[in-house]
Amino acid sequence: MKILVMNCGSSSLKYQLIDMENESVLAKGLCERIGIEGSVLTHTPAGGDKWKCESPMPTHKEAIQMVMDALVDKDHGVIASTDEISAVGHRVVHGGTAFSASVVVTEEVKAAIKECFDLAPLHNPANLMGIEACEAAMPGKPNVAVFDTAFGMSMEPKAYLYALPYEYYEKYKVRRYGFHGTSHDFVSHEAIKFLGLDPEKAKVIVCHLGNGASVSASIGGKCVDTSMGLTPLEGVIMGTRSGDIDPAIVQFICNHENLSVDEMLNVLNKKSGVLGLTAGLSSDMRDIDEAAEKGDQKAIDALEAYYFRVAKYIGGYVAAMNGVDAICFTAGIGENDKGARKGISAYLGYLGAFIDDEKNNVRGENRIISTDDSKVKIVLLPTNEELAIARDTQKLVK
Ligand code: ADP
Image (cartoon, rainbow, N blue to C red):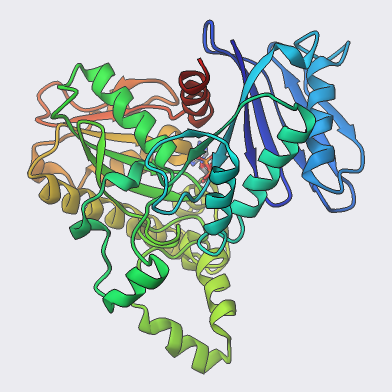
């Protein structure tokens, strides 16, 4: 069975065609600048060269047609006909409280995704556009929605309620949802398999540290708590997002800088995080690492703050679960930045958790990176959200 995985943003679309026989990627690619001048598709067949194709893509509909054409292209394609695609799995950012698992898309599901537009105004409309464009391009083919928020639905009220007037929860569903759920779900289950932990009782903390970053705690693969909240702004320090702050800062800065709340939220989402801490140097950890190595004090402080904050979340989650079996690192920084893994793990000695520098000198492969006598396993486990989406899709359409 071949599954097409789609991740639609407002002006971009990422895809992978996965052969579920052996879970291999047949082709992957990206459409950029959808709805903007200069739209371009970059398509890479497995084992082949990148192929760029510029063509107007006023909407996601044209973009998806380009993807279909690329997949069957006589020179760069990997299938003879789109009939070979059994189903399409879509990443959908917000499922509200309606979805605690992936579902086959129906009219009701689309209506529920629409209902969450105000909870994820940048993502959900694009995700729905992608679904509708696939329905139009491949009539009758099943589409599956895989929600970033589904993993967080197993949180109990004590974890998901904000201490706000209850009516906001009742009227507007203002609560903590959590994001990166597909990744947290995938990595926590991989950890259980890889380490041979008890599938019912394993206490696992996953640090998904990419451009966006979040930490989760799960018992038996079920989310107990996770660091992102109503939106992805809450939690640890990220590339450009502030993570947790005193909410009164919003009013304080708005008054001093004459900003609207929307403008301030833009600052918190796009100009904060390590980018903000380094006075605009970069949101990319590679640049911050390099600057810190050269002695840039702001970069050194940004790294320290980043590690400190993740470590505090880990500590909080150990308390929340009354223990931990494994602490996992994943995503761009978690998989590639040994300095970040070491800097964060330096705070974990009280748990009897110690990193092994030699084992930590690794990138992007499943590996235990703690010392042999470490009481808690520290593990590097690459995430694979596309494969997780494809697996869910296969399960639902089989
Ligand atoms: P996204 O949240 O966009 O999916 P990724 O998980 O791809 O992000 O992570 C991207 C981030 O990973 C980059 O911004 C960069 O900070 C970090 N990164 C990638 N490679 C390295 C590396 N070798 N060292 C440090 N950081 C890295």
